[in-house]
View 1: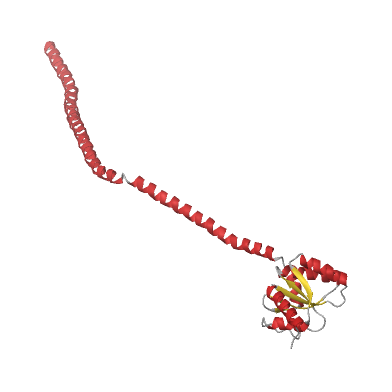
View 2: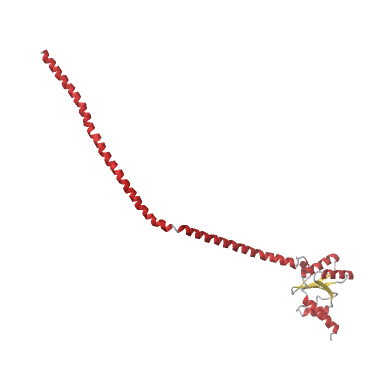
Length: 249
């Protein structure tokens, strides 16, 4: 039959276990009272505390969380409870070990699983939870910002495209009027051609007779003129000589 004191202590341990976000179990042997007090102050500033609890009570409290750590809970042990950011508690523990070489780490309980000394050391080297969340939000926000920018760019391009199509339709609106007026140009050209045809024809007809009249009389006149004087001269000379001979005789 457990004593009332043990029952009360077990309830307190269960409350601490249920409240904590992480737990680190260490062997505190070799630490002075002053060092333990220093560790308590450092842990309190980071939403944590250190408590020396009987291994049997701690094993029972962990058992109710389906954690079997009976084998690890051997020898003097102190528990570091983290009620906030477990990484901060791991950093305080790592700093203290670096400073004093104690306490010796046994194991830890973080995110519903048991972790060893190596994993606790890795946790102590991670950025704090606040910094990790900020980085995560920054990483998640970047694609969203790019998506919004791309969406705005696509909307802008779509608006420009619609505007260009509207302007093109506005320019093509008078096209039917131009097509209706196009046939009218054909008669105009025919009329101009027909009007020009008579002008060319009279000139050709007038020039042809003129050339014929000039060329036809020229040759007879020239030939007549050329033959008549010579024949007249010859005839005159012959008559003169005949007359002289008559006189002489």
